[in-house]
Image (tube, rainbow, N blue to C red; front, side):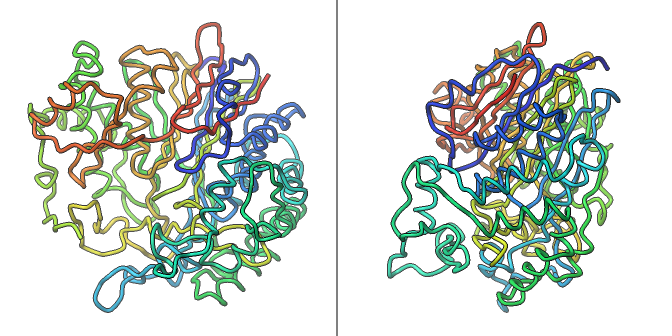
Length: 578
């Protein structure tokens, strides 16, 4: 591979933390190095690491730690995620898995009552949390590929927490919504899996000191989080997993019926895993392998669609959208039945991403919608939110990092570890929680992704690199739960199949199908009426929604110009660079 002049981006699912005026400024062109994240203070921390002699890995680590302070609904110390990186000097793509794990006391039915119904503890409070992986994952990447001292990358975040930062109107609104008093008829845990208001330690951290609603421009100071970050800066990741911070986590768990114990934290490890790879129209596409499903799902869809001349039919044609939907349906069936933590399940990644497998699947796509239930060799029963963020960095030497991490729902389990200042994830809800119950609503009960002690839950995160002739052409991805691979698919198709400009590729309408529920989601006001009517004629159930994903993307254009393209579906991203 040749030298890369690269690209990178970041996105988030629900609440924005930028401001509308930042969008135009974020849409920049850089020649040397850049950081793009969902929050400006975090992007500044990353680009400062580059200006002090760090590389793209240093910048990603500094940005991720800063996001744990300035983007509390998704940036995190108490969650987990994945890194996909290109190492220019080695011409190699590497990946890091720091997905959360189930505690050692876990069991497949731990969130079910005596009647087999789900309990709210799978989403709200200490018991919803898997063993966090973020700090170990960033530390592993630092040990392998970074240049600057660890403390130099963590302390900017500690300072932001200790001294505070001016919050945006969007963050003020999000915190007010999470903390507002409940109406008498609604109880804790009701609605969207509870709120910060349900957890006293979270109220203490995120309430405005005078008890009044937050306003744009107010300063959010988080002294406990600042102290935690300072300990991590001074003592390294072991503080989080074996030191004072670990003690605070365990004490909180014991006081609040959580499952994580000292042995869970001490045993946690991040892993370097092989990337997933395929080709599409002569370009190389790299992604994250299991326990993320995103890379395999994306590669399988691209392999299937490569068998059709989508460009000849046209992007908005009924036949193109029908074939994309059928590819999505088949890839998500494989996700539900074949993918899980590779340390526990034999995942046939090579088979699922092979061209012959795609050829066989493509031959099963006819001229009408395939009923999703017909793909399953088991009965489908009648039917009874995620919050993620992604950052991207590129340095002058051509090293690049795509890092996606999450707390799962917005503000995770809504539970701040008392005395430590950070929110816990609620990733245990990403397991298949009701064994053997797969239903038409999208609930999956297949065996590979059931809860087991020490197992990592399946993810949909899809940090993606596209290389052309050994040089990075695009990096993209999105938040949005199971919609993430399909958001990424549309961006890649728009660039590589339909030859759209970077801005048009991101702005164009998206669709989503995930096997079950058996319905095509489409973005309202972004598709011709004739296309939607044609899909109905072919037997596709349809549902219009406001937006699918937030694919803040960077594309490397002519003369190695780095085009940062914020997704205007959210007023979030902030690019910084030189």
